[in-house]
Length: 133
Image (cartoon, rainbow, N blue to C red):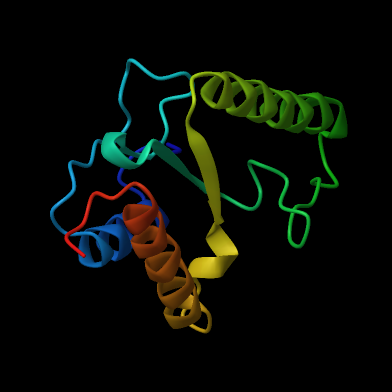
């Protein structure tokens, strides 16, 4: 079974976000938002998706299986077009949308990703004046 929640990459990003901005309300898969982002920080108006390289056609690592091409091509195209539609809808609601790719959480890149994501989150918190200065 393919899980949509509680995956290792998602839990890794949850940990990074919790450490970077520990006092913020954080929702996982809120049913009220289009596409049910993996993480949602309401006070920062931020939706975060943790994307699998295969399922969301990563530009670096996405590939189409050699077998059953008639199934996979439309399936993966549908995933990508749904992702775009969901992002548009979230932006129309005034939210920023960030995507974290599965490959950015590999053991070789996880520290770099954590540093970059932490900096961006803290900067956003200051921008929204939701942290004491």
